[in-house]
Image (cartoon, rainbow, N blue to C red; front, side, top):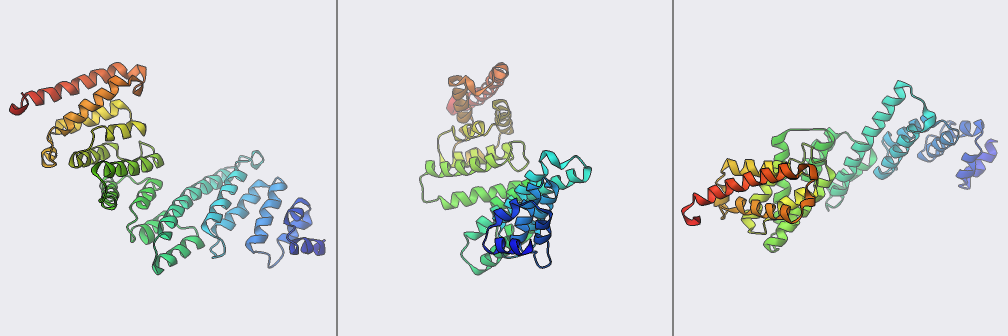
Length: 330
């Protein structure tokens, strides 16, 4: 048998070898010196075909987590994904330790995907230090702490830092706000040659892209903070007033939640609007928001429309009171 198996292997007839399904095939694949990725790749397939899904998953786990330059990160992610599918198979069983192993695999997949995002960002940096970092990121799976401390933070990869914090379940509001400030500043700097409207469009596009990566309840997507920062930018750039509230509604933030946020911003009576050149900016935004609601009531579920209308009316009343109190607006 061994001679036949060696011949099949030498002629790259791996599928034929695995489909034989004989116990002697396993012995051949597990023979001394057969610890190469190619042999392990055949071994997990043999176990999967034999219905031994847990064994297949353990070999895939080994392939994904063993440090070596010959296996790249995208392959490691693929191995982990296959291991998860093996563990979710009906024939695995319900033993507690198998459930723990599945959970570990799922966590590894999430972290590995974050690692892939870090790798993709660093791959675009043309220097020797970045090349060495890419080699390290490809040669092994790395913890979130290492990804942050050794790669994302030293290179100031703001978007990667945000993804790492989200994956880790981090909820430090000050740190997250600082990261978002960096992201907005970077986008603004890179689009400084564009018109004001185009600059705002670039910023909105970036926030939308990141917003789709997180849930709107994630600490890493601080809706109230972002609404404030984006409205300040909108005021400074003197662009149309619909950008921010339209973005947030598109991302799934409820109209009621947005009204609460704008009400809090208005009540705060922040003088930044005057400093940015338009003290009536928020009032104009609220008016635009109200128009969008009246023109498209489908923005709000039927069951919430009365509450939205009442809250909108209260906010508009406050805006009008403020306007009437200003001599130049009377």
